[in-house]
Length: 114
Length: 115
Image (cartoon, each protein chain N blue to C red):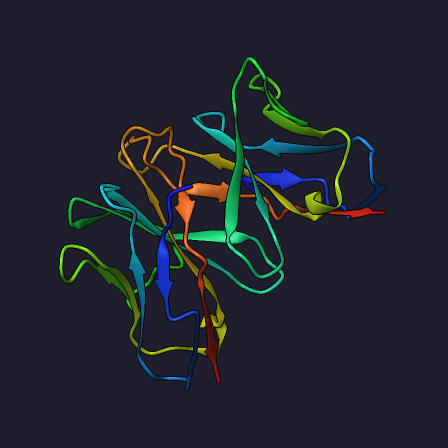
């Protein structure tokens, strides 16, 4: 199965700090997604990204969040000023144009906001 | 509104048992349907796509009923390694009408297979 790589695996930060979560996508997979999962809850969509722009975002993805592909390869999620309620697992996902929206997930970054 | 609803579980079954999970979705415009499995504190992993005609992959059989907006997963001859949370997942059209839309996840049904 294709592999999506995420770093770091665990990030601990203080409330109000900025964090950047990184994702190395599958080669030639052009569609990128971020999801999050608060402990004990369901996986929730944050944002999709294609052709260097946001395709769709959820109501969770407010002005504190941003995404980019800084070097045309890595895909990042930035949270500008973290809140306690941002503590969750953050998953990056990829798909290519050939699949029927089959999205492959990275192992996730566990974000702990103190 | 809950986009995807699943059996709450948990299901605790002996090895060799057959177990069935059900799921309903609310958006009739949904395009693609999946079952993912998720081990504790791990990422969701695709188990199988679900097609209207029904499909089978080894011990796993998935069914889709578009009229009832209902999806099912049957696991035969359960193994210890099947213990996981099973996620019913549906995609919908994006705001721009694209099929590249978000995936909606159910809360998952926990399965424990005991020896």
